[in-house]
Image (tube, rainbow, N blue to C red):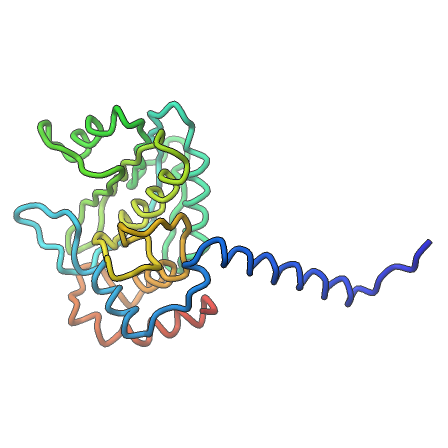
Length: 248
């Protein structure tokens, strides 16, 4: 019988396999292979998605910081023929692991939810959009959308509407973008190629860029209702600490 290999040799082999897996993952998703932009560009990107909103009401003000001030409890309303609840729950767990300062979990049975993910087939998208937006004659754009009810004290409720039956890749991309947007970064940013907040990207992962933005947003030093001017002096330090914590 051959002699057992030393533990150090096994550990070295495991490290090589892990490095190879990470390399293959980076090639599979270009956003993971790219270095983050400069700190100045990261802060510009944060400002773009946090201190505005893609869709606003006629009399609403979206120019201040928006986020949930407390725990987020998520419920799925799955009206699709495909059961997408496991995928939503998996992504919610990923956010909870990856974003410090944010307590987000699936709502337990009987527990009130303040974030509802509506999973629908294409034929029901407009109907559910009208119900969520309380616009009986309105038209809901795109393949997916997020809506947040907020004031200067924070977000009180969010809804995401996601089409399920147009393919797994589109569902995954929409799931990531709309759930993240419902947590506060309500605007798009076409200048951020590494982000799902760029509508032209094809990303289907919670990228390092977006993890940095979400960790910045949910830093306890940034509070709901804060203006861009009040937040600006804090952002360079918060960004450096987040990058160090995430090892980016």
